[in-house]
Length: 388
Ligand SMILES: Cc1ncc(COP(=O)(O)O)c(C=O)c1O
Image (cartoon, rainbow, N blue to C red; front, side, top):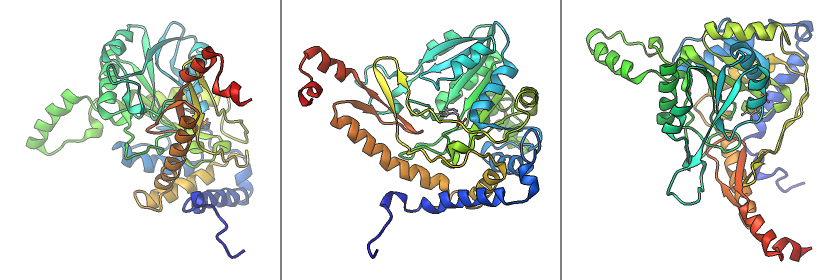
């Protein structure tokens, strides 16, 4: 063929997908040890690069052997977290709308889910962007009780696509510190943000009042070290997913990162349930329905590779990102650029059939107000029935 064969949409991304697939093939052919058990809490090459990569981002020295646990997808990281930290009678605050497994996982651990909704900002008319959905600080405050053990934050959020602002996270962080509550921060879509929106990690938040006092002190002593401030690091479990990070959901490799004082409990659950990640295949859940008003749509064409999990390949992927981070070569820049277009196309499709999409600032999902559909039904002669 003389004409260009590949579609525009895969330009610039093909290399990266090939790259991670190659890493995977190399790992499979990498000798006998690649087919045997590895370290229970994470293949050494992977925990080392995760620690190196995220230490720079969190501004906190992360110990690869103590502060990182590699799991069967983010899903198992969540499971270990709830099982390890939640007791009968504990309350766990969950922000609505939420990824569907949080509630049953809390229940299975014997806890009680307490819900607090994100709502469109009052007086701003119908929300067009996930940025307009906010937590009421008063309502959130009212959910904290002496029984509150943890809060689950998901940013960017599935299915709304909301990316929490620094101030919003600071408000949550202050409440966690005040009430001595653990924060479970599900950040599987951290690299998928659009329109210049920046993902902020709550695990790196510090207590502001204290920080200000320290800054004054800094001028005197020049020995200020943010990571050493009392804050969120010591009470946050940050959860990530190689599936979402490298568009390889079938690999089912995830992780939890946090202080070893918390992580050691997750490790106990992990060691006595799956022991370490091995071969596993899972079907990704692609569509979920939120109540009756909104429905969510998935705008990534699922890339499902071999079900064999090889943490070596993910380690190679992260090493490469470490080397090219912040440049155009970075997959973490290329993937959102690709999905940005798909997101706009999906929004146009939804509008063309009379739905009102809420443009997500991050993640894979888009929710749409479907109340127009019931209007059509009530009128008896809907566009859809006319077309039949
Ligand atoms: C918010 C959120 N957390 C966790 C997961 C699970 O990720 P993994 O496939 O790595 O288990 C998903 C998957 O859709 C998700 O949307």
